[in-house]
Amino acid sequence: MASLRPILLVEDNPADVELTLAALKKTQLANEIIVARDGVDALEYIFSEGQYADREPGAPAVVLLDLKLPKVDGLEVLEKVKSHPRHRATPIVMLTSSREESDVVRSYQYGVNSFVVKPVDFKAFFEAIRDLGIFWAVLNEPVPGDF
Image (tube, rainbow, N blue to C red; front, top):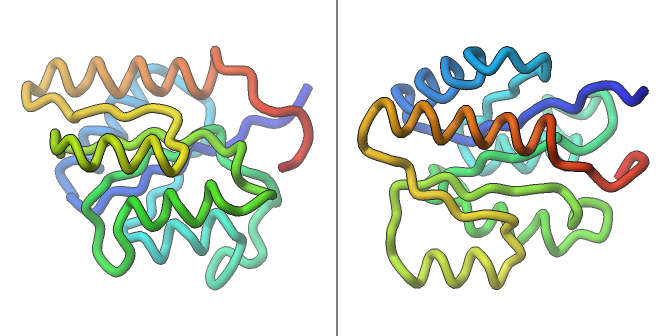
């Protein structure tokens, strides 16, 4: 049996990080949750660079990616990951408060697997994160092997 892949949460808003971690914990997923606070940190994790150069190899089970990030925005992170042959199969869910049509269109053009608008209501946000965690970490069948 393959080891569990971590979930990479890329979010700069501390309140959203806290809520997302609480919702994922409530699902009782055994996956480790890695939090990146900006686009540079996310790219370093995915490409095993910088502080993550010595991390265990392999792609995350899913990347929960905010759109509006410091240093490098979510669309640029998405584009860089999906354009790289080794990482294009990495599941990425854009998890954002943006409802702008251009953000949705560009996300899908760059290869996002799903675009989810963060619900404003606490309970709905919690349920959305729970469902995302269960689907991507448990139900989704990843590409076999270390990609």
